[in-house]
Image (cartoon, rainbow, N blue to C red; front, side, top):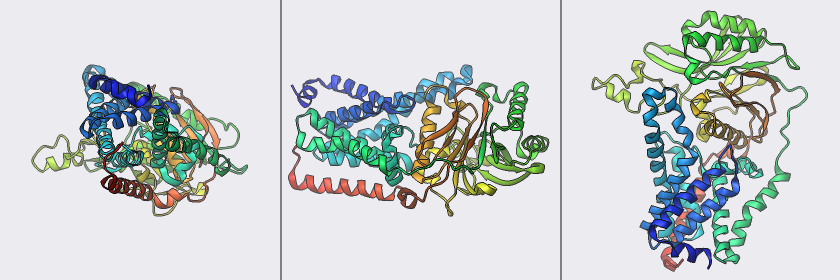
Length: 502
């Protein structure tokens, strides 16, 4: 019995259970496991379940089940912040995970329902899932974490992100998955080309991938990783110790060449900028002639900002960037400022309850290193933020505090997305994380040096060169989203002309 007949022979409940398991299987392709064949097999099963459904409503239900299973496993790290203060917040963790997974699963429900409504063919399957991944990136504040295409970041197919971004990688997974299901159904004529497409493009990427290694005269960057656990980071008795640890790493002898830049992580010091004069003087003294980039908080009136500064000799702040893409419910409360108009001030960022957003993306000058595009934590997962610059930078500079994400999934997935951003733009990235993984990433998205998760330390490493602007850097997501929309439109017209045959 072939795969389609086997799926159709299952009862409704068994199909739902299979959908949940199939979705969870797909999450194994995400970092740190990177089992990319599991993602192809997962989406093949999801596609097959949708084709076998008696109608679009059943397909939507199966898509919802599969999406929920996928996000329950892929985003399991979301429970970690609630256990920083477990007695107060731990009870909320399972609700946050379940509700988030169910909510994101509704995107899969819509995509599979559309696929089945248009005859269950491969074209609407590919187009619909591409469009829901685009929607996750841009709708409301966006949440593009754990995209289907992220399962290919640790493969040679990462090269194609320089042409079509993460949505292009998603399209390759979907095409390969649809082809795999067709092969299981005995439809070799149409299934074999689709299934072979990712392998062909993988082979083609090998000679096309440009050289991105550092030159002999490349600048040396010192990455400083203090490894301050989140439950200890702001403890008055320990915070000064973490600060001194970073000072010691900053003043340490060069591993090879004297660093041209020293980088500390997000919120690296416990003092706000306006009260950090002595601390900044100490940092400048420890750094000698090298400038230091570090994260800290600052305030204007009642407003607080999550910021990054460049610190030069004498403790002078010569560049300032305020994070503009904030985490809803984590760094600010949606509609908080609106509610303040009615006397509800407890959620309002303009009253100092949460961070205020900065004015937007900007580049900062780093002397001989050129222009850098600063990113703080969450901003590194949004391709539209990384590509939003008036003048192309020479490098990407991301500081983060991944201690919130635990030690299992979150930090590695965040690192993988940083690699994707570099490959998309053709730019190297300096990435410094409080607890790790701090890394130097070249313009092809490959890690050239790193500090492991959960370890304190420093590393001096060469800055790889930038590549010429990639096609994706010039266009962003517009062409690939337009392609998906056009493909869906063609599928609709074809369906109306040919009927609903599967």
